[in-house]
Each structure stands twice: as C-alpha cells, then as structure tokens.
Length: 164
Image (cartoon, helix red, strand yellow):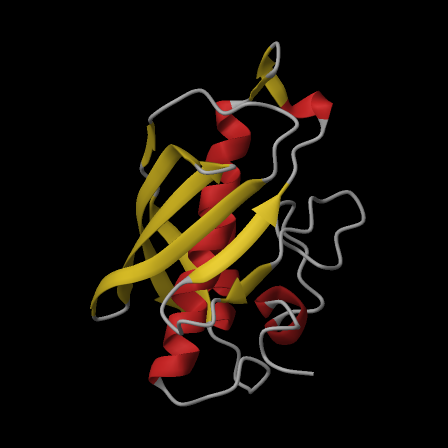
C-alpha cells in the first residue's frame, strides 16, 4: 500500500474523535485527507448529505467552514511531519489547533456534487502555519480558506483546557 492509499487521519490518528475528521467518531463525517502525487497539496473529497443544506439545493456555509478547518489542519500537520522527515504514524504525534479560520465564499456550493478540497501550506513562522484551502464543486471554485494553524503540545493543551 502506498502513502497515497491511506488517509492522514487513519495513519496518524486512527483514534481521532473530531466530528469532521475523526476516524473513531461514530457520528462524524470521517473526512479523509491524502497527499497529492505532486507532494505539495493535500486533497480530500466529500459529498454532503441533504441534511447539510443551508438553502434549498445549496450546501450550508458552516459545513464548508468545517471541511476547510479539518482539512487545512491536517495539511498543516502533514507538512510538519514531512518537514521533519517523519512518517505520519511516528511518535510523538504532531498536533495543531486552529489559530485563525478565514473563509471566502465565492459562489454558491450546490448539493449533490462531490466537493474537492485542495490545500497547501503557504508559509510557516515558528509554530504557526498558513494554509490555503480551495473548495471545488466539480470544476467550479466555490470557496477559499486562508487560515493559520498552531502546533501544540497535546499534554500541555489538555492540562490548560477549561481553566485547569
């Protein structure tokens, strides 16, 4: 099996519980992100269910934002693994959180069409990675995310959660 055959989520975090991309969340969407053969972009595809419409026949913008958030976060993490010359399943795990999520809605996104997400890291400063994520409905660009993801120490994050 090549690295392109197994999603980043299933490789690096098979126990993930995120609603959007967690492989172990029985109620989640199970977004799957893969390195593109160009070695620069990370790709995903998702077909929204009818219950995620925001207007008749159009995808809810909040769902698009979640797809961009999850996929871009995995793009940032995959970038860190590659930059360190590590495989995605290697330990310790690399984790990022959303520092800033920006979405520009360009055209209405129709229901019933596979959505393709194409993302890449545009820049990095310290622990922060800027990720650009394009959302296509078929061949039509419908949204672009321009977001920042911050690499975190998971134990430290958990210790400081909710004012602990």
